[in-house]
Amino acid sequence: MLFRSFSTAVIGLSAIATASRHKTAKLSTEAQNLFDFSMSINDGRWDNSYKMLWSENNGPWSVRFTAWYTPGLLLRNQGDDVENAKGALRSILATQMVENFTSPWYGDFKLSPDEPIPQSPLYPPQIYGSYDPNWREFIGSQLVQVVEEFEDLLGPDLVSDIEKAMVYAAVGAMRRNGTAPDNLVLAYSNPGYMRALNVGWIGSRIKNQTFIDYGNSQGTALFELFTKKGANTMGEYNAPNYYGMDFWALGAMAKYGPKNSTFKAHAPIIMAKLWDDIADHYNPYLGNMVGPYDRAYTRDMTVHDAILSLYFWGIFGYRKAAVPPKGDLDLQYDATQGAAIALIMEYVAGAMSSEVKEKLLGPFESERTLSRTIYYDLETDDNRTTTAWLSKELMIGGQQLAETVARGKQFVPAIVHWASDPSHKPFPLNGLFSLYPTATTITAIAESHKLTISYPNTTQEGTDSFQFMLSGIPPPWSLAGNVIDGFTNVPCLDVNVTAPGLQRLPTVYGSSIYGSYYYNITYVVPSNFTGTPAVSFDLAYTC
Image (cartoon, rainbow, N blue to C red; front, side):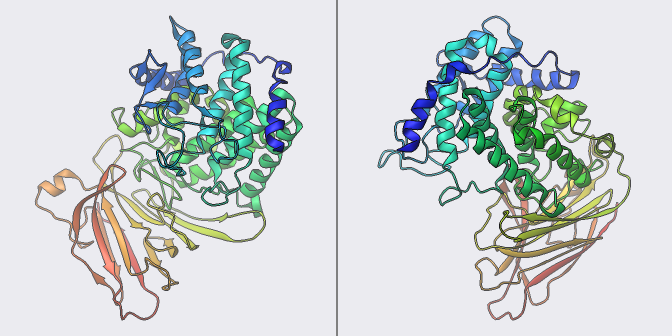
């Protein structure tokens, strides 16, 4: 009952919060271009009756997309924009779930305004199903921005209601500790950074020391995990999509964080180191980051969007670095947040060194090998390691890990990219093949022109096969009568496979993952196999 009385008492203090000022005077040309593209998408989704954006999200409208639209309306400030933004904010606040104080969704926001509050049997509670606890962080961090940037346009009553909502959200967010089914541990980077900002920010607004201390302690812990033993790695590592959300949180920390907060102080340092690592992994010729990826939707940033692309656009301009065609549905999804991101772009760009800019914009200079360590927590030295090798036309990445729970299809423990059609513009067509993660203990090592994968713990499920997904085949190659049959005939790449004792199944085409169709090339481990199953690839670029 402590938090119930605490949150009630704290709400009454909102009147003492100091007014903020409109912080963005003018966007850069590149950020303005991203802003305009974002608004052109969102304007067409607007439901003026309900002050929400149409977009399917557990219902026909999206609360999160609506939140991302509001700063764009307030900055543009034309016609009914401000009134629509205020109406949208009231609609968003109305979706906050505060009826059940002991529930894991207390202070969270619905995904769609029409969906029921989780309850059995009508709408059984299911994390990342009937509720998403990260919506507190997504929507809360957006509320931070609109108050910091546009408090004068919102008026005191609406600002007071936003503060109340942030208190509810902070109470719910502070309870999350990774206890199943929740998974917000310290290494779950993107919601962790947003939570530190949200709780610390509302604490500063209402001068509540409990919230202030929590935000600062999380800010310190996140920084210590990132910098542990000089690793400078996110717990959610090499994730082009979620690096975009990390930059969102870090840029907002740097711009809107309370003056003396730990996370405001650490954010520029983390962003600078993160840009360094991105530049090391990025191949400007292929327009992609080398793997492996802890979490990835697209495996090819030139075809389908990753949120990181929005920062390339907002800093360098459209398609100066990897951004897919404007018609890409993933880009139109991610760019919903483009206006909000444009408002923090200066702070994210300011953390980028001139050396990083040169690496990102190319040309590709020289072959390189990378090795990184990713720690799970502050209490142990348990870790995962990644290796990668990059040349201009070919790059390889792999990860070594020993876990017991499958990470799911976003996890890419081993992947190879190459220029399967170097004549394609503005980037070569990327051919790629990756290991689908069926096992939970994997040793995948990348070296110059070589990838080796093995399953050291064959007592675990999923170690009975190596399943590879191959895609990025040029149409002229296929139309000339060529057919993929395992790795024996691949455009622009010579592949020598060594798989002792394993059996290759017939190649199958037609399945897709996150919108990308692929050939399934599977090597089966026979039931009478003894030893450590392994597959190795010796690779040579041939075009």
